[in-house]
Length: 499
Picture 1 (spheres, rainbow, N blue to C red):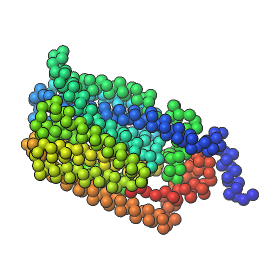
Picture 2: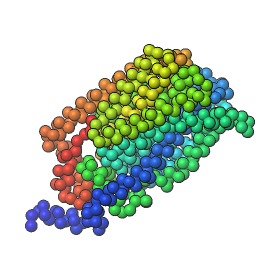
Picture 3: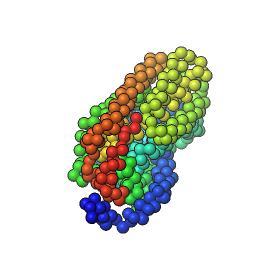
Picture 4: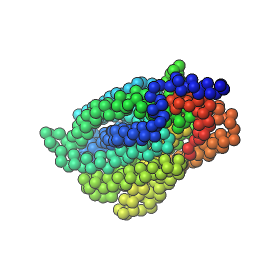
């Protein structure tokens, strides 16, 4: 008997009892697994993301109903209030994702943070001064920093690279619809709760929306999954297939080495030059899309009442959420990333040009639709990062945290680029945003060209493929799939970057 045959027998004999059954029924179990995730995980994170941005942007809506006047805020102080959240939001994302990549129960960690930011959001309604509002915004950024990069890490731990874009778009459509439903909800609260029990309507806005989020946080602890190997509402077969299909997707098991720490993942991410390019690209992108924090104010330039303004702010985001899902579905089908991301930025630039050249109501409202669609491109940023920096999980978690954390500095800068003094035309603001999107386009072109060169090198050089391999993770992939190490290596050699 040959050595290879002996190796095959050893692997089969050492496999877990369910392995033979799993291999024979893998496709059926995989379909059941994905369906269960789609029916439980996706609706949960969608609703959470809706409330995430409703809570975050409540201060911009409250501005329309007297927040500035009641607290005596100046234009500069209001800009500080907006930007202060990002001071803690940006810095907390990296350590939170590093922690998330090593804890056993991400559902408890994420759910607790959701309840915390709901409580802080509700407490914002009792503030009486600039200092109190500033303290609430600074504290709000810490638990909120966990959710988006953490959820993207969780999604990338369950879905393959050809499934991830569409699922992340469903998550991100929650952000887009939050701008729509947040405006509709705010319109009802601000118009119907003014003076109730002697409390201003903008305070009721924080009380009601924050309380909803607290309840959602506790429910999400039960609904969200943990890791593929220990999720309580998955069967043993489903947990095994969840691990095996991710190993098959990248040719390596999706796990950290036992002797590696979370800091090791951060070090690996900091040594990867692509992480820096992605971070700067994301920062420039979010500066270009920073109008989102002022969308009700931009809609108000159309000249309608507060209630009508909030109602008009909804349709662009509903349209954007539909286009976001369609674009991501096509990106998954084709495996293409660059044009599905940058193409939407070019639409935003066209919207800026329309807004710069006309003050007519119809033209500016059309420009708002084009601007809102820019977030269809942003929804693919973390997906592209997780595709390019896929293994080990600790590195992927740190990379997502770095790219999103540094990127949100763009939102911080954007808080100062939409000044009241520049309204109602906001020409300087539009010009700054346009330049930022052009710069992010150039950086994304550079990333695409680099990945094309890397794939060509992998096609031509077998040694280059082996250099990228971690033997332990390939061995674990072979164990999960019930194949030999050599067979796992053949699959690993077929791995290519998506661009």
